[in-house]
Image (cartoon, rainbow, N blue to C red):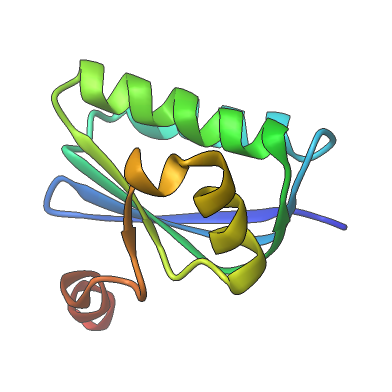
Length: 115
């Protein structure tokens, strides 16, 4: 399955919407998107995972790498709206305590979308 990544930035924050599956084959595309995004130096990145059907350990490593780089820059990386299968992976691996996980995309990003 194809992976689609779209990014919207607003006031030093970025919302990254991911659609599809994050696995061994699609993870390099996601990694390159994060590399490009983090060069802009946002202070907060929220990853909208509401349309992610599957995420394997390779995908989780990409997310962890992005989280580490954000923390090094003094920023925050958060996960929003993971589907049950992705949420279970976060719970089983203990990553739900490493990432800030929101049940839905934070309201301020939805408001920014409309402006």
